[in-house]
Image 1 (cartoon, rainbow, N blue to C red):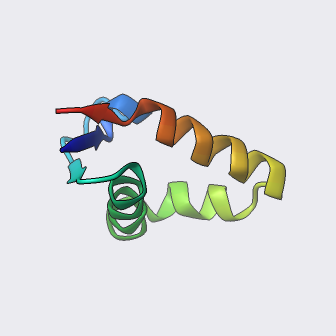
Image 2 (image 1 turned 180 degrees about the vertical axis):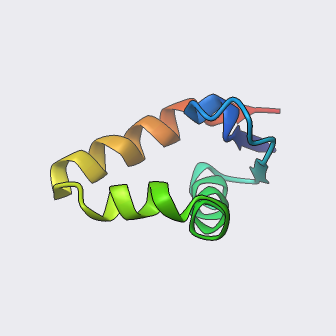
Length: 67
């Protein structure tokens, strides 16, 4: 089992925790949460260059922890 939290991504106030069996499953759940709970951050992400989006996705995957 793996996890990623909003806190791990820098949001100290949100307590959301994405869990899954793979990094990709966890990242997909985190992205779905961001769309619903953090539309402002998603809007910022949509304005990023493709290179910066790739870097952010790699950063997210690197922060996924084994539980």
